[in-house]
Length: 193
Picture 1 (cartoon, rainbow, N blue to C red):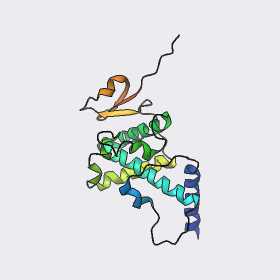
Picture 2: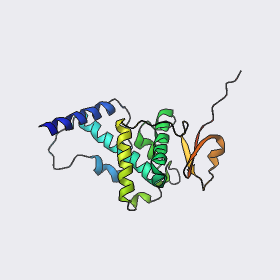
Picture 3: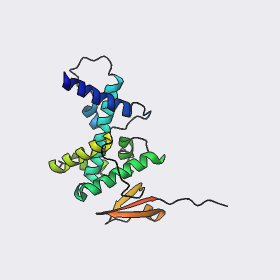
Picture 4: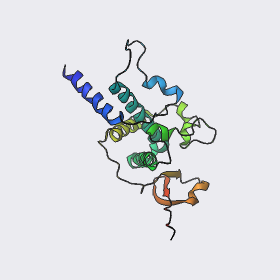
């Protein structure tokens, strides 16, 4: 069946994209059911491709949640800027190496979450269907590599809303303001002579 072949190719592609990642994603306990195989399927062990597909779906959801909760009113550019911060953090070596790891870092600690929506109860509120669909669509394109991020933020690894002034902002270099968010990158260390 052509549909099954296409589905198999997509799973294989997803498997190849994620199977080499040695890191385990952090998926909040209340999200496990969204990425686990249905209990009715009698499968002894999921294949590496199935595991990779589940991880890819979890990563897509974590990215969509970050873009939705942090920038749903900022349009596509604002949501892509949030995605860039997530990816810049993953590459930095100072943060977890997965999307879910970056997004949910500190979520289990009071006042330590990196993205406020992960610990302020906003995840429990109903989503705007249209904005959530857009965030999922963009997250799918970004995680599948069909929408390359274009460095709108100047390698930013942090940002904050314009109506707050966090203490860490003075220790970083401001790169750009996009909508209601100001973006920052680490200050380059000068070489000692």
